[in-house]
Image (cartoon, rainbow, N blue to C red; front, side, top):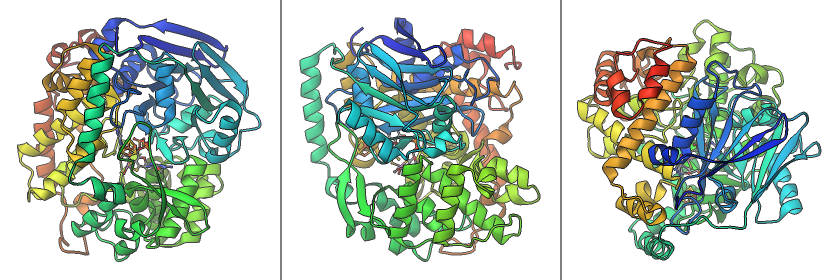
Length: 610
Ligand code: PTT
Ligand code: SF4
């Protein structure tokens, strides 16, 4: 096999046993890499009903057949596991030299099982994989621990690690790398912590063999050149994802006061334009010529890398209109290894709970010191932080009463930063995302609004959600490269088909990639259904009730809210188009058509397939 290394590294932390395994060609052909590999391995190897924080859970770091080559934005990998936050499939995508080094070391994925007897880190250097003592790193923040590991193993080492939040099993702890790349929102950091695994350090001296190395190099160079010529390139380099603050404010979709509103009176103070004047340097992922990590100095004099999601969730969503203070909260989350979206959402939930008298906590909207204290309490699970570290779904259920009404999540994963009172397509994207409420698979909000059809519920919306899920979930998460060249600069999808052919020698087409996306989606859905013991229904695919029941009170579209009946019809259209039944479970014929006949037979042990 060319393009793929064809090898998996398995490491059992309980026994210290390493296995290097050549995987069957069929895995590459049917699941390609990244998320595709992850869900197939979890489906085949994870015992249903496994406690996500037990040694038996499986933690996977997977690259794809394009990762690590000299191709635009190819320095990414997927981290996946059964999620302690949702109980279903969880993953995240982060940029790190660790992705490149993994491929250089000769692997396409690392599969970690068991639990180390004491705090440890796993050192992978080509064929060598050994567990090292991490007692002196345990308790350190991600910046300090990464610096120590790089001192020990070289500046070019790829380090994927957790902070105190992961060590303390916070349900929305992430994996961090390179001082601000963070991935695995559904608690992948907690899974790592439960395994006593502080870090994975990866070095490699080889190169993944390509089918047509010269052709691939030339195509990569052409691709980089093409990116530089894009109209939006200059603006992107200045603002990156932060331009979204202004866009959301103008369109009343900026999450504000725990997603009660879509406009924030302090939006200008946290906008991309404000940030531009504060940027001291830029950072990014490897192999990228459109880097988007803008670093500012925070209110305490430290560097902090800003992205839209971080700023909206730790800014407008908690009523804080001071970008340097927002940057401080963001820096704390990076150090502690907490997902900024989960943290901002949870702080907003806590502020509203305190306001409503449901939680005995001295905190108000925009309370910077209160938010700082809460972030610490979350990471160390102190006081009320212990309850809130479970995520807003479980915390609200424990608080009881009306609290679930202001818990903003889908399937237990906190919503990322788009208010959906009047964008039903985006609400459907959140609701049907394969990991819970994440925008990564279908960011249809921009299409919905720019085409002037935000209020519509027509079948075209379901088509668009599926199209985006096929591209984002079906190509970018499997090839594993960054999707920003395409989504932000219009770098055409055909490039990726050509890259894939030059890397692997396998002829493909966009249609084939879409059907790959459908296969991966169906298997992820099957995984959820199996984990829930077959007890699965369409209520799982509903956005937060707030967007239906509590109209916006401010801004140009005040009075707007989602319509339950129309949403339900749209959801049914989505199911019909996907070939899923009215419960949201793939039909038997659909699974068979996607080459998942064996998986269908296994799923039938849990539920009747229609
Ligand atoms: C992603 C989610 C996002 S999505 C953001 S900002 W975004 C938040 N970033 C966090 C952070 O930073 N620190 C922290 N402690 N927690 C954070 N949580 C939030 O996590 C990220 C970029 C971005 S920036 C996005 S959209 C794109 N995501 C991609 C994706 O999902 N797939 C893909 N093929 N390409 C992508 N490119 C873009 O990558 P999760 P990163 Mg992230 C400070 O991982 O779990 O998916 O959550 O990885 O290397 O930082 O790049 O406006
Ligand atoms: Fe990373 Fe941004 Fe480049 Fe994507 S565009 S690879 S997120 S630096």
